[in-house]
Length: 340
Image (cartoon, rainbow, N blue to C red; front, side, top):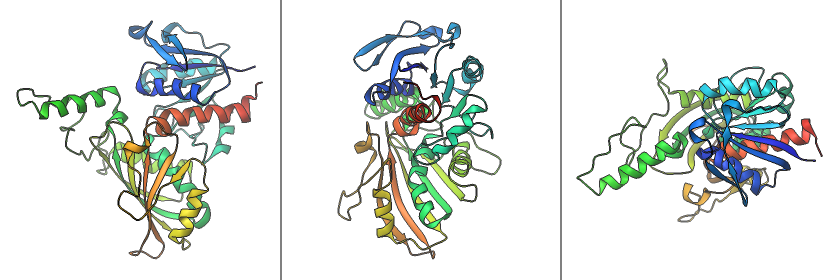
């Protein structure tokens, strides 16, 4: 006996990826329904070798469904997630709405699987920010070995993190560069994104950081260890899919780069590609469509006593969103729901 699963926001980038990954990983579902807003009613989406027609989220009854994967914004999530949870359906939410509430678990299964027990409080689980998810997969095994004191991270985040509109804007502006008669002013981003980089993701906060940077700080503490100090600079780059991060860590105990490399090679969800030759590393192009978080450029930082640098790349639509949500669903099934 399998699960009954609803994918909410099934016509968006992340919703479509959720359906793809449910099929790819052969999630034990007896029924999968695709839900969307009324304007997308009847749209067709793929689920493995099947085609699903979207149903109206506004009138959908979640009673009898086990899991709902939410891939809509915080506004509609606020309206619909409590209804699903009240109906007995566990919500796994990809928005930022519930991430910082103390009684709702924020989970990356490779990092803090035991937090799944917290679902019993409100029947809701939060999926972390895409830039945080891939980083903490790498931080956790190193933290277990040498205890990380401080993290300094600079991100290079693709436009798919801003949804379909962000991808469309990059595409149209790139074409316009070669056609001087066409002008495509920025609407999704603050500046032109084609052939440019933008040191702002989300809104500015009082201390000068952006909300994206604040998310990385707060979420890393909640998922890994509240004692870790984190400072982040988040940058949007003209890449369609795949986030990259340059990460510097300072540990309490000395951790040799060779040992760190071995630890990461043995850690779940990580693929180490680290050769000190031209091209001996992973870039966003190579990670697209893959489940792994790729780690390269592992090396000692000689400017501090116990420092390491590494390069971290992952498909943000997968590990940063849809894959992590499905992995949470798998964990939920194994530990809490236990059907079949």
